[in-house]
Image 1: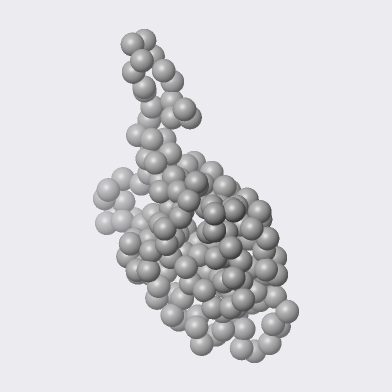
Image 2 (image 1 turned 90 degrees about the horizontal axis):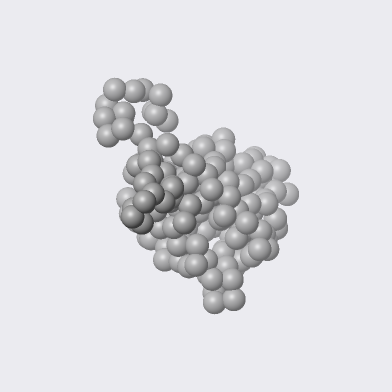
Length: 169
């Protein structure tokens, strides 16, 4: 089951943060920020052959306020960077970011004045999925790594944002 230990009488015992992590990892609400050719591979992963729905990530959200995973897919120009940052800021906590494709991860072969050389210079990235474009199996591997990260994170107290400034971006 993965949540905790079974005790006498078939009762499940676990810690609250483990139960929340388990539930969150199987309900990934992704916001696709697609700008380039990697979008075709992103769509291929959602088809029935690879089926990311079995990982709880099958239905994309088209509002950053309703999503918890920002999938940045494709090349990001310096002109798009403020838009990407604004979308990230609109997402509620907890939130995670996936860099999809080599152009998103490092700028790819666009080593010029117009292209951002990795979105981690703008927003924090949790999972990097390399490739030009990445194969669907690589995307699924990245999704599994994200699930492990989500399940392992501790749940912050409800008033943590009000008393702590370490969460500010």
